[in-house]
Image (cartoon, rainbow, N blue to C red; front, side):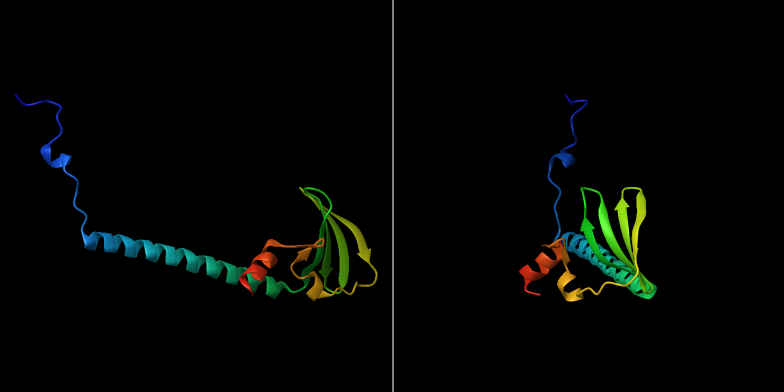
Length: 127
């Protein structure tokens, strides 16, 4: 007597995995991952290229004042402006009559006396 809802005999055995199929899937995965990394590298290069082209606007220093508030010193042309930045609002706090001289090597990678994650990562990698 045959069972009406029984699975066919061919479905009960495990499908055989061929070496050629596994190789093609692995190669396709490597191609997709390579494309993702190439696009990420290209996006980073395009972002830094665009920021160099603007040149007239530069963030000189930033200081957190609270969880979401910051004081930012911005160079616009030859003038320096102190801005208060909060969620949904940017306010001019002061326009400096004479530009401040900042030591760029001392402030690179440091915000409010603490090194940034990027600076710590570079130091741990020995770069």
